[in-house]
Image (cartoon, rainbow over all chains, first blue to last red):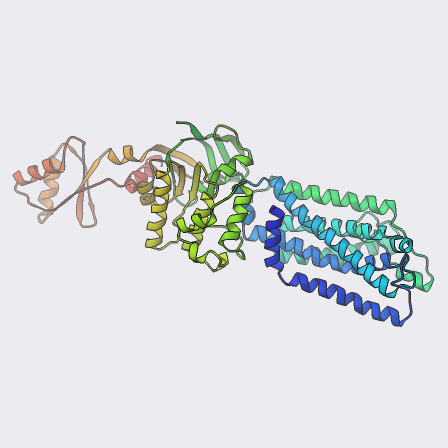
Length: 250
Length: 298
């Protein structure tokens, strides 16, 4: 029920933009769709479609991350977190309500991805028999883990910083610039392994599939190591968030 | 009488600043307890620790003789500093959240909002409310779980005189329902009008605790004035029962010992040929007691 109440908040805070996100999400995929169909690639064929879609929709998780960051930072800037504690909410309950939000968003993106995959696949795939449809659907789960880990990171950054603007800037800057540049230098300059970085590990769950269409070898399965590393980071971020909420004055 | 709140050596340091130092405090059921102190004396910090939002440095406290678990706070209605609500939600929705956190079954939102006079605006978003309305909603929220104890922190801050009078009346009404109230304020007048007991905090240290009536009744104060001020002063200085004379706001204020009344003083002055043009019995105000308490401590 607290989660429900927070949804109401989020509904107002993010409001209609959330619907627009979904519109945008579908639109985005429609564009991608026309481009790839014109070029005659089997992007939306079953078996392949799950990895392809799961990869394409990685952008969607940034929007969800903003939802999480805004939800946390509004609690701090409006001080409602303070009043909720005064009213008798425990700190653990507060964290659970926010983790509940993340779970909800994760399920939402998983469901959206599944529906989208089924629709696009049914429309455009030459094979639509059931065994082919469900083959490779583990990419949906991998995508959900990716979203969940990513949102846990967003939760941690927001709880640490508590200012909406600064949190979003730092979050995006880290996820799109700092870590990719750092790992890029390490990987190509010094040939060091980079699989243990958080954003990299989330991204590794569903690897870039399209290169196979130009006959390059790609990892077209979900690797156990990637799952473990991503789960590890998720646990670390959630635990750090727990410590922050538990120990700090509000 | 049972103990509602007990603190033991409660202390909070913010870095080098000692916000609250070794506070021992006991509040009984039914008291209207004032926490007085200048700005920055540690009132809100103390309440913050008691309400689980500020982590204490050391010491212990106990609500209802049952410790400090978060579930106990569900039996407390509290507002710290400003009214805090989700700005985009209306009164009912904000009340629903509070009621949900406090596990209230079948809350009567309409009744509460009528009590605090906010019923007509119940469907408007919180951010559109005036400060007075926000305070009213805060009081409604504090009352939502029908708590045994209510905590108000500067409830009349920033309100107009009518709003101040309304809120004070509400607090007095709540106290008459038999609820325990803790009221933090820097407004002495407010504590004097509302509270039965009070303590004074200064730089985080408790410098005084007692009953409001006891403090007020210690001395009687007489405002007196005559055309011949010099003669009046001389006469007053000859009376043993007059413990001090001060010139305040155009009149002389004399403090009398208990057995000596205004009538005695008037008779005495008349016998000395001094006719008082102004003579009034004023209740000693908490303000002077408060200032003298703070002075003594220096």
